[in-house]
Image 1 (cartoon, rainbow, N blue to C red):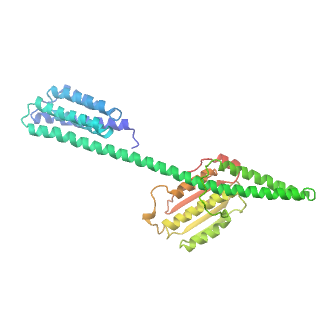
Image 2: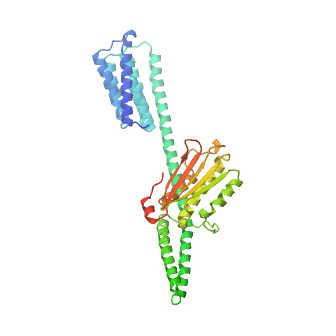
Image 3: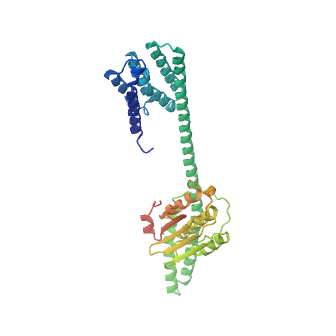
Length: 383
């Protein structure tokens, strides 16, 4: 509930007081003393403590019953002011343990019997039955509400813990991939260093080119190392080593999805150019996960992959038309794949949007900076 609890409790207390006042004229028709100004003032005083019932339920319960006792002792019809004590007993049962809520329910039953004695009732079996049944039912409803709330909090904690584990696992996988990317940079530097040393005295132009390559590769490697240190590398799971995929292999991926029964079109805008291996890997994995989701959840859809090269960034988007969606396979919450997409985008300072389209279907759009300065400006820019 978006409304503040104190405001809600104020509205509830005002509503119960209003209902009690509307019930007041009924007292005379029931053969009870008619309510006067003092009685209506007591009605307000009985219901007023309900406002902070969520913060101090036991104190509120005692105050409400004390006011109800004064009202009953003054000789007025007890039923008019019974709503406040009922809500107070329910509140204690829903927020406090049994050892505290049972005495509060017993307090309401005792006051009910006292009301019967003050009014010299002839229907004692009915009074005693009501003094037992009403508090018992309210107490039971309160206990069920408390257990439901505890179960909800426990489920939320478990979901949060599961999400943290999924994020940690995904970061571990990203770290292993980045390890391979950095190893690639170091290999290039090593080869170029050997070449520069070999031709240093005989071919100055080749040596200069090798040194320039070493400089550029070293800067990229340092950037990848900076990102890699942001995550913890999990223990090696024994997975066989394989070349890191890049955006040039999107055609192969699209072909594999087509063989699975999903028509895929690939559009490349701008002039393709070499990017940092980590950036290409991030974009490739996001496209891979998005197309896999289409294949799993909407095998009858047509998918479109759009890759756009811009001066300082690269954008990839995957959309489908929503045809052939299998509702039982669509998850209502964020799955492992969606968490992985967001973690990859955050790691490389990118922006990602994931969600349904207005015209139907689903869309994933990822924008990644292709320079260290742009990446620093886009940290944590995920949606």
